[in-house]
Image (cartoon, rainbow, N blue to C red; front, side, top):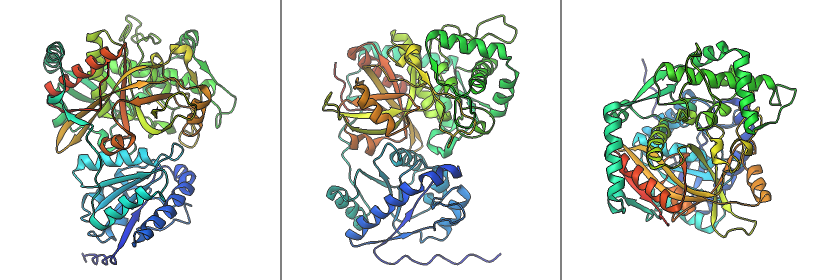
Length: 545
C-alpha cells in the first residue's frame, strides 16, 4: 500500500478556516447563507491583522452548501491539511462535533473556535458543544465570539491569537468549592445522600448514546460508576416498538389529562406543516412506552436521543420529555394495570441523552427532595443573550431554551401556562408538539457536569429568572425558536463573556428553589454531594441572599 503524500505546508501568515455543519442536508442548506456571510466578515477581520484565510474545503455545488456534513468528510478534509498550521473552526450554526473532532485531535497547530452572537443562527451553541468535546478529548484550543466582527476589541483579540496562538479570558468568577461557605448541615446531607447512592446505586437508562455528535455528553463508565450510577443501554428501536403496542385509548387518556390540566394544543390538518391529532396521539403513546420501559429495567432516570433515529419513525419526543420531568403528570400503569408507575414523582429525563445532564439531574432531584425544594429540573441550551430592550432591567438577560425536557412546573401557571406547537419541519419531518411556555420569575440553581483531564467536574452557580414584557419575550422568541419554552435568566456575578469562556457545554442545568437563601443552600448541598462522589467542583459567580 502506497503512503499518501504529505500535505503541503501552508504559506506564512495564512490560517485555515473550517466550517462544520449538521448531519441533516436540509439544515445545512437552510443555514448556509448565514455561515457564508459570517465567513466574509471573518476574512475581513483576518486581513485587517495582516493575515490571509484559506478555506480548508470547498463549497459543494451538488449539495448547495459549504459545510463538513459527516465524520467521513471531516477525516478526508483533515488528511489534506498542514497539521502545524493555525486553524479557525468558524461556526454560525449548530454543528455535529464528531465531524471534526477526529481531525482536530491530531492537529498540532493552534486551534481557534469562533462563533457569531446570534439567536437565529446559533453558532455560539455549536461552539460551546465543540469546546466541551475538545476539553473532554484533551485537545488544546482557544475561543472567541463576537456580535460584530468589525468590532475593534474583537479584532485585537483575533490579531493576538493569529500572532501568538493564545487568547486570555477573565475567569475570576470561578472559585474552588474549598473557598465556598458550605454549612455543616449541607455537608452532612451530602454525605448521607452520597452514601445512599454508592450503596443502593442507581440506573441511568440511555436510549442509544451519542446524539448529534455530542462527544462531551457521554460519560465513560469508569468515571460514572464510582458515583453509584450505572448505565442501562436501551435501544430506540425498543422504544419505537413499545410505542406501537400502546392502545389508542390509553394515549387518548393521556392527552385528555393534559388538556384538563390546561395545556393548549395548536393543531391543524396537514401533517407536513401542522401539529396533527395523530402526531399528539403517537407522542402520548411514546410517553406511556417510555415509563413502562423505565420500570421494566428499574431506571431512576432516562434519556431519549431525540433528533436522530426516531425522527424518521415518530414525532419528536418533546412532549414526552417535559411531561416525564414534572411531578404532576398523567398516570401510567403497568401493562396489566395492577400498579401506577413512579406514582407521585417525576421520572427525571435528560434531553438528547446528555449523560452529564442526566447525572446532574439525578443529583438535583435527590438534593431538592431532601431539602423540600421543587424537584423539577431541566437542561436548557445556553442559546443566546441580549440586553433587555423594554426598560424592565439594566441587567444582561440570557435566553435559555430547549426543545424538550422543560417541565410545566417551571411556568407560572403550570400546565395551564403551556401551549404545544409543531416542531419545525426542517428538523422533524414527522412533527410533534413541544411544551412551550415562559419560565416563572424566581431563584434558580444552574450547574454543569463535564469531563476534563480524565475527571468528572462540576460548575455551579446562581441565577434569577426575571419577568419581561410580552413584547420583549416575543422579540427574543422570534430571534431564536418561537416553538420552544424560554427562560429569561440573569446569572449572579457571571458576565456573558465569563460564561462563554468557562462553560464546557451547550447545555446548562436549571432548578428552582423557593427563595434566594434556599437556593444557596441547595447549591452548596449539591456541590458538596458532587464532591463526596469524587467530582472536582467549582462555584461560579455570587450567591446573594
